[in-house]
Amino acid sequence: MQNSKAKQKSTTNVKLIAVTAMFAALVTVTTAFIKIPTPLGYSHAGDSMIYLGASILPAPFGIIAASIGGALADLLSGYAHWAIPTAIIKAFNALPFILCGIILKKKGKNDKIINIPNLIMIIPTTMVTVGGYFIANGLMYGWAAAIGELSLWWLQPSVGAILYVALGLGLDAIKFKQKVLPETLR
Image (tube, rainbow, N blue to C red):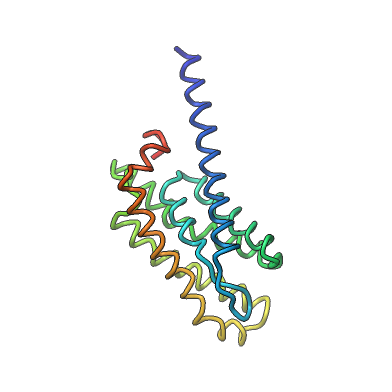
C-alpha cells in the first residue's frame, strides 16, 4: 500500500513538471514568435499563456513557467538585456492568478480556468506588466523613453487577456484542468 502511494506521488510529480515545462515552452513560443515591435522592444501574445499556466498550475509551478518562459523568449529574440527584468515581471504576472487559485481551492471552486475571480485577476496582472516595464524602461533607457513607451504597454496585456479568455473557455469546455491535474493539485 505504501509503495503504491509513493509511485502515485512520483507519477503526479513527473506530470506536474512536464505540464510546467509545456507552459514555459508555450510562453516562450507565443512571446518570441507572436510579437508586435515597439521602439524599445516588443509586445507579444505570451501573456495569454502566462495567465493560462497560472490558472491551471499550482504554486510555485505557474510562477516558474511564466518566469522561465518569458526570459527564454527574450534570449531567443535578441533582447538578452531584458531577460532578467522579464523573469521578475512575469513571475509577478502569474502571482495574482496563483493567489486566486489558492483561495478558490480552499473553497473547493478551482476546477475552471475562466471564472469571475480569475477574470478580475487580469486587472492586477495588467498593472504589474505596465508598471514593471515602465520601471525597467526608466532604469534602462531613461524616464522620458519610459513615458514615451507607456501607452504601448497596454497592448500586450489586452491581447493576452482576450486570448486567455478565448482559450480558457475552450479548455474549460473539454475539462482540461481536470484531465491534466489530479484533484489534489487543483
